[in-house]
Image 1 (cartoon, rainbow, N blue to C red):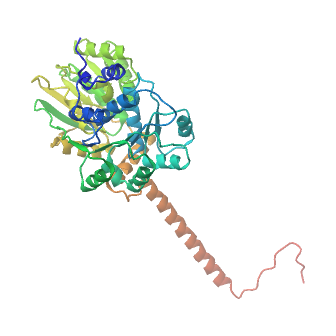
Image 2 (image 1 turned 135 degrees about the horizontal axis):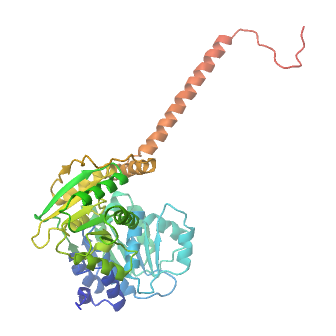
Image 3 (image 1 turned 60 degrees about the vertical axis):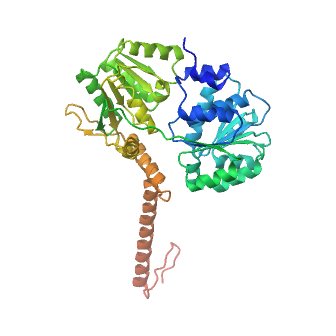
Amino acid sequence: MEENPFKIFDLNKQLLMAVEELGYTEPTEIQTKAIPLIMQGHDVLGIAQTGTGKTAAYALPILMKVKYAQGQNARCVIFAPTRELVIQIDTAFRELGKYTDLRFVALYGGLGPKTQIENLKKGVDIIIATPGRFMDLYLLGEIPTKSLQYLVLDEADKMMDMGFMPQIRKILEVIPRKRKNLLFSATFQPRVEKLSEEFLEAPLKIEITPSATTASTISQKLYKVPNFKTKINLLGYLLDNNDNITRAMVFCRTKTVADNVFKFLERKVLGSSQVRVIHANKGQNTRMNSVDDFRNGNIRVLVATDVAARGIDITAVSHVINFDLPLIYEDYVHRIGRTGRAKMEGEAITFLLPSEDYHLEKIQRIIRSTIPVEELPATVKIEETPYEEQQQMLKELDNQRKKEDPTFQGAFHEKSEKNQRILKMKIEASEKKKALREKRNAGKPKAQKGKFTKKK
């Protein structure tokens, strides 16, 4: 049996077991450089894009240092700019720390703080939070800070863009000065450099430039599809009508979508003997058996999420199908790199929804090339987009515009403003009519009203 490559970091048995289960085959560049420095107690400034393994680069040494549950109050806090990223980091810590007794609490806005306060009261070792919610609960007296030994700022550049700096400076005033600090950012702008100077004590800087070159043996193509059901129809058509697809990996964004795609292929296209699905909810043995069946050519299609597919090295994959476009853009390169290995030719096929042009543009910028668009085959049935899916795509488009322009209020907000304008115009028109009526009636004798009015 091969030795776990993460043993070089002197991690304990519990962490090594978790790393192995997650399918990490070898440390990434930032993990190789950052983990030893953090373990040695240095302040670290890491410049690395999302998708380079930076969460594990600070999570593993922190889990190793904090080690086991102790007392009631947190010894480490990690700040991230968005609720989604907080949830993502919290999930990573829970997966890596699953064989420890450490307690994690995620704090973010968008829902009432009651449950989060209850979780804090049960005892916590590591907090992952947005700066705003952390400060709100601190001011309520729910977060004692005296025990904090580690402070991490993840995606510092985004936090600055989103205006979190005043809150971060307030947080730095209320936590112990004697602590270890880690700052990670995708870019090293002058603002990030200035923050690092006031936040870090003699930091060691690590800068990683992610490789985003696709292999020349991989041909790429793109199909534009209007909705989920049309994606399903297209996937079925390709597997039914293309004999060149001898061994395919189908990548989905979530466990739910992966399960739905698997059920469709199992019942309608391939049968139960030719397809398997792997994701984080599947047991380790099930995942390993599915991968072995795929590697040995016993099944034709493996449906997977990015988390479950990490570390899979299979040389004879003929096709990678991106059923969903990855939102971590570097994952596009990792995904399609599953094919075209060992100098063999491979093909990467991507399905694109109308709301995903923004993400496609970012991916194409990373890979420095344009993915050719193919016409949908004439026999693929184009389904009507359900109302709920349409609304979801509109919201997604709003979110994208907000990322590029923080002042953008959103289509739904615009609709509300439009309704307000229409209402205002109606009120003004009504008032004009009333004024005109009163003008016409001026000078006319007033009619006497009431059933008790006496006749003369």
